[in-house]
Every structure is written in C-alpha cells, then in structure tokens.
Length: 128
Image 1 (cartoon, rainbow, N blue to C red):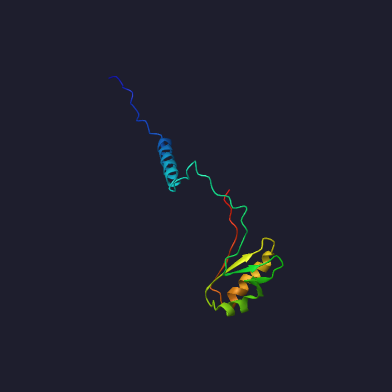
Image 2 (cartoon, one colour):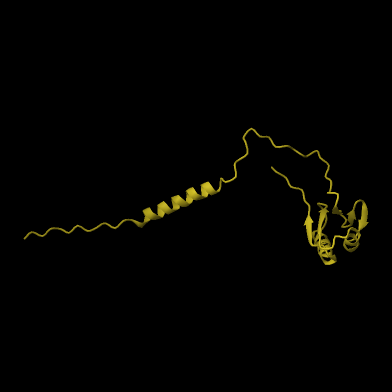
C-alpha cells in the first residue's frame, strides 16, 4: 500500500474579511459625508466688511466698560425686564468684543434671576 499524502485544507486568511469591512466602512463614510451638496464652483460669496454693526432693535447692548444699554438708555437687568414685561421670555444681548467675560456672565445670570427664560448672546459670525 502506498501512503498518499494528506491534503490539508488551507484556512482562509481573516485579514481578507477585515479589509472588506474596512473598505465598506470607508465607502459608507464617504457617502454619509456628502449628504449636503457642495456650493457651486462659480459662486462668489458676498463680503460684508463695509457694513456698520448694529444690534437688533430688541437687544440689550453691553459696552466695553460693562454698562448695559437698551435703545440708547442705560439700564440694569431687573429694571429692563420690568420695563418690557418679558417675564419668562427670550432676551438678546450684544456684548462688545472687549467686555470682560466675567461681566458678561454676571449680566446673563442677573437676567435669568430677574425672570428671563433664555438669554441669547448675539455675536459676529464670519465665513472664510
């Protein structure tokens, strides 16, 4: 009797399955990342560098010295909310760029304590 060599089954490499999974994940993230259509290439965005910055008419203005203003008159959080009757309503505040952060936090907390529902800080937003 002649002994025949046994053929061993080759195990498949697990790295092939891993490569397939990584490839499928790559395709998924590429498709998911392009949900929003890109801007047209010939589109030129408007520049607003020459505009004067103006606060919304219903917003409080906090100047660089930390003084609170409403429509050109100095005010404080409690009397402002009493004057406009915004109990539980939204309040917008436009801080000067150089106002101290702790003063801004102090004013927003005072507005909340006086009865403002939400306090929005209005800022400048640029698109570069």
